[in-house]
Each structure stands twice: as structure tokens, then as C-alpha cells.
Length: 111
Image (cartoon, rainbow, N blue to C red; front, side, top):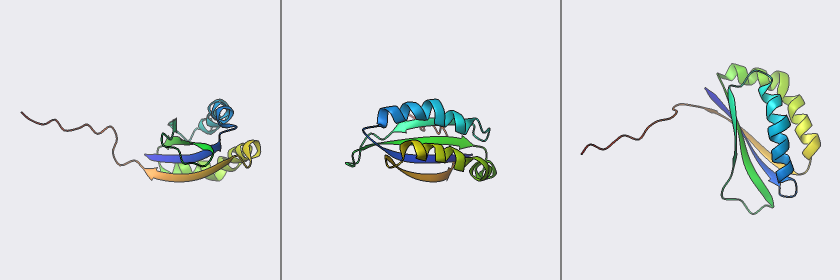
């Protein structure tokens, strides 16, 4: 499984409106392409003093082929809408991670 992560620092002046837009418009557009199995949005707890709020928007997909096809055929149009709406109000960093373990439980100590 592949985790596609977008770490985005959004100007505090638009952060609340951005978060609503991401949830109501952007993520449904990404999910609507059919390449992703799920998503989540997290907020960074320890903010960097840059006048912004930082979020991680994460999507899971089955394999790199699905992610590459999404990037080739859909990402540019979706990212352009985001850029046009919030130009100059955000900084983004994207990363791709391979999930190597999930829901690993803590080993119980024997008494």
C-alpha cells in the first residue's frame, strides 16, 4: 500500500476557510478519480513560527501504478484549482511512502 502525503502550511488568515474547502471540494475531487482507497487530514500540533497552520493531507492507494496514473492524468488539474484559489497563501511539500506495517500491537509482557 502507498501513502501519498501532502504537507501544507496555510496562511492563518485563510486557514479555516481553506480547511473547509479542502474537505468539501479538494478531497472529494481527488477521491472521485477512483485511485485512492481512503484519506485523512491531520493538523501539526507543534507549529512552526511562520504565520501559518500546517496540515498533512494523506491518501492511501493500492500501489505505485495507481499513484503514477493519478499524477499523470488528474493531479495537474486538481492542483491548479488549489493554486488558483490560494496562490501565495500556502507552501506545500509532497511525499510518497510505502506502508510496511500497519496496526502493529504492543507485545504484552508475561508475568
